[in-house]
Length: 587
Image 1 (cartoon, rainbow, N blue to C red):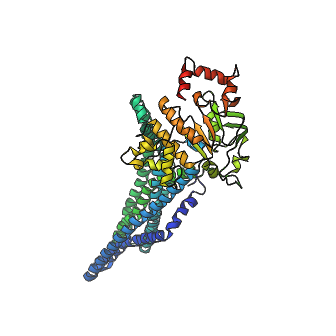
Image 2 (image 1 turned 60 degrees about the vertical axis):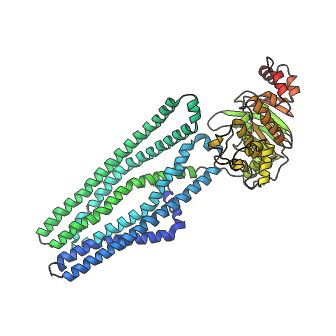
Image 3 (image 1 turned 90 degrees about the vertical axis):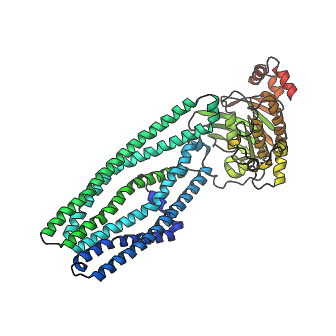
């Protein structure tokens, strides 16, 4: 708890929606504790009164009463186990919902630096342990506390000195637990990290299994996994070593309690301070004291897991989400005038990517970005929807700085088609409607037709309800691209970004997809990133980006007129040896 000042306060707030059931759960736990104390009380009464005075009727009544109480305790334990765990599940559900909602708001930079498997570990393993702590923690502390205090009070009524001798062992146990707990906490935190590493390794390997098989690199993947697996084993070794030290030392102290009672009680009986019945009661009651102590010891491991998991949960929750600027403006459908005014940008993990970039695109016009790989073209595309904040300068849409526009409104008006198409597991319908979930069936079909995918969909047995597999694995590259285009058609944005949209396709498929893209571009401000210069000759303007700067601008003809121009060199290099003639024929 010390590592986070308000950890306890933030944990408690998740109990609020369940406070009524929590109170009932604690009340049931109290009754369970009180019923547990009846056995030594009845034992003392029997040994000191009922048996010596031959009150057989009362012996039967007392035994029956204890049995009835135990039946009641059974029902109470059922309630605590069931409803108590449901409280934990409810808290886990809320935490997971909060975390998922927060993840949706985090900037792109977070996902640049965190693997999917590690994030999944936060959502699943960590929060499961937190929910277990949420349920078992208060019950264990409450029941154990009542049992310890209650047994001390009761034993003090028999003999205060003997009770104090027994309970004097408690501080020794507390010191031993405190001494070993720190190491155990650190070890369990390390084990959590390695568990996340294994999840990330598995997620990466399973997602890329086709690449692994294609390159016959299963041994390489096994080697990477074994490295993470080995780190996990070592972390487990350290955590279990710390746990073994903790349990063995504390168990020795609890075992010593029995010896203390045996010797001290025997001496008190020999000296006549207590009766044989009292001595027997102390022997029975010491287990009443040891049992909650043992429960608290065992609870420590669960406590470490739960607290570590909650700290990791808070570590993500405390990351600042994307937020709109104060007084950010709503953006109805814009005309689509885009201006870059001396924009500079660098990623947090690297150097400067863009330097003093200035250009403009008029509404409805097409700007092509070309140039060497790594020059900053894709970065420019990421800055327009404000996926990353510019370091210097400004980007404006219709004269409004995008920092002064609500991000949701800004992104609603921008459509993106990328080289690496991402499709969600589910049906074709689900993926097209992702562009606008409230669209009608007719609108969805029209979008599919405009993307030239409708006929293929209708050839499938289940039509638009056909499952496409994880990330669209059942579809070809061209089919996936057309689905992504249909999705953008349905979104109907004012600004369109095509980032290498056809570079991964064969020539025949590219021609078909290009027809869909040309249809998509009509009436929209379009920014095209392309390596195949044949696809950008018709652009209203072409900008050559190199080393983060705009080094040439103009139409295809104007740039070809520059004898020493970079664009002309790239064009002639790309279409030498007759490739140009072949490409012209394909357009």
